[in-house]
Image (tube, rainbow, N blue to C red; front, side, top):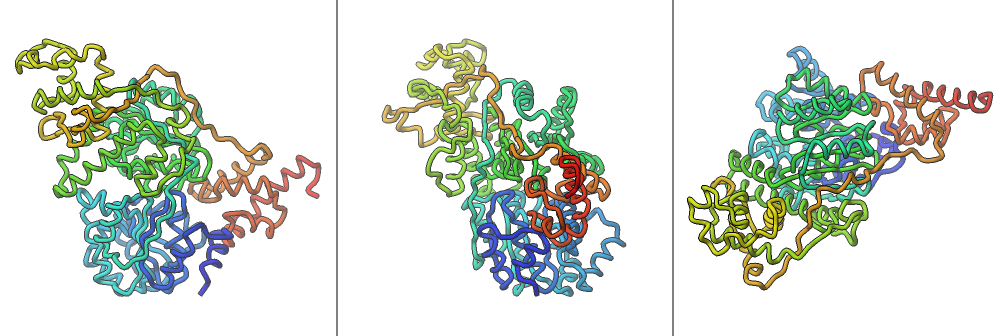
Length: 604
């Protein structure tokens, strides 16, 4: 049996593990269970792939999305690993062939959806096979999806019941303490070792702004730094993804929609283009991106606010997996909060689950409204204190202009109280600004002492006040009463004059802020870089795989710097294992030799 270090070098082409990969892999190889939290791009997959290759039998990976399975199977096949999947895209003959390969011991890894795993026939098959381990990938889905449309996630405790002696490893990039506790409970991992790597992604620049003119704001963001970059734009609804994609096409961007309501063939085609072509933008719902190992996504944009900080972190983490500078850009408004709370109200989850989701939504809104370092708040949410401001988010780069909003906040809270906590923002602003429309007169709110006391602020400014009070937990939105604002216990000291509050001053008229641009190191020969990329692209097209499956940009940059002249030197490049050395070494070495001839006149 090869050691983990030997497999890392010979199969994956890496010299050393990142922390805490080696300890996780050692735990699972020795038969122990593990819960792994590691940031996107941190190397989670190796934590089950290497133990599956080191242990006897086949590693079974429970994976949430067909597209994710296919992407990972394609990448592992390139490395010479015996890998396949079982899902609904296969006809009976193809599925039967995979099952026979499993029973014959001809597979190192097998990817299965949770819905198939929980079927009696599949369990019977696995009991006849030699199983090395079970890996539950994207384990946060147990909490985030299991309560609604993927109920089979809540049944995965059966792994421990039916296979008590086989190690299990649950992996995710996103889980707060509450989600971790639910994963442990649902998967029966109380005895598992927990490995929590750092959540910080310092190469990502976080920017969050209030919605003003969403399409104009998005266009400004893309034009200032991301004209020729691959990226993902998230929208709350399927309809909106298609509208934004069509509009971006009109603006001459290579944009494609992706959501669960599109035909399967269309989704597959659009995803394939995103993976294999350059500068493609996918406009998607949350159905897209999970586990997609495209390293050069230069930006992730949100046209609407995600429902949790976990979702935001997970989605933004799909940018800059290669470690190069990337942008996480978002615009939001109070209407997003109202829509998300409506969705929560219609959830099939328990009341306890709904309350937990409500707390998570409040935390997400709080991240949007914060006037201090975004990264500090984000990492603190996951229990990882940041010693100082990051210097790479909007609030650090352009400190927020604040004002003493104590008096305005008390007026807003008083308006909620005086109108008996039964009305939404629009009506409350009418009362504060002294309107005498039909609704104000109907409820006799023109007779209230707070009627007209807020004429010093306009409608937009009052909206900002109310939104920030919701974001900071002084008010809540009651969806059972059509979005009425209700007072929270936290508001008492503010109302009594025992507390002051500073609010952010909104200024949506500012010009576009400078965005991060990706540049090659100054010592790289651009001609060689482009020639290596052309070679990679041709090989990828021949095999029908994304270019990064051949080699990541990091490997190409290393080739430009090291200029390997033979197989031994080429084998020392990061990402070049034995399989890829044999398969691609000659082609890339020829490109480098040609570069020498063109530059120096001969190959020697």
